[in-house]
Length: 188
Ligand code: NI
Figure 1 (cartoon, protein in one colour):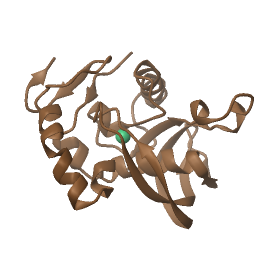
Figure 2: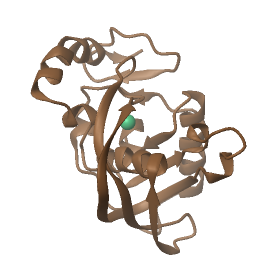
Figure 3: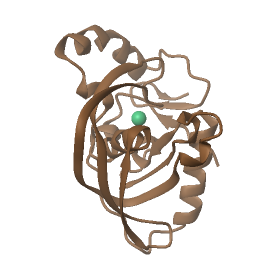
Figure 4: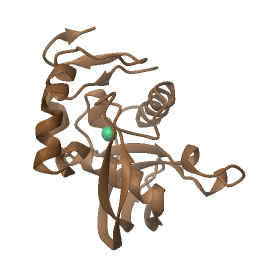
């Protein structure tokens, strides 16, 4: 099932999400639907708040960012109740976009490496390190479950320049090739 993606302006994107319990109903189905929703919108990551669920869960697939022949270096995974334990390395800039903010891409600076603890779909706990673009996608999605958007990382000037565009998106005045949900304009 493909969910509509919550657009910028919805309070759920500004809410710190809560951990999910091991008896969360139909978690496998939800994760499957999140991957389907993400691929349908040609995204590389999707966090539960972006489908209106304020829970600490996100899915990623960084394979599209890998060079030809090196797709297996990309990571396709669901992260449940994740905690970023450490970020390290130099900050580097990468052009980020977000399915909740269509048509906006900006350079964001983040550290190159992370260590993260999370549960997988079978409730097995893992502690792993990621770097480069995969770390980047995880950092972006992790922000979502903290109520943070990539535009928050921009300079005051950039934010001022984007304000009109973001207001338009929140009102549903935007073109996306996937279904979206707008807090200010109702469902479309
Ligand atoms: Ni995003």
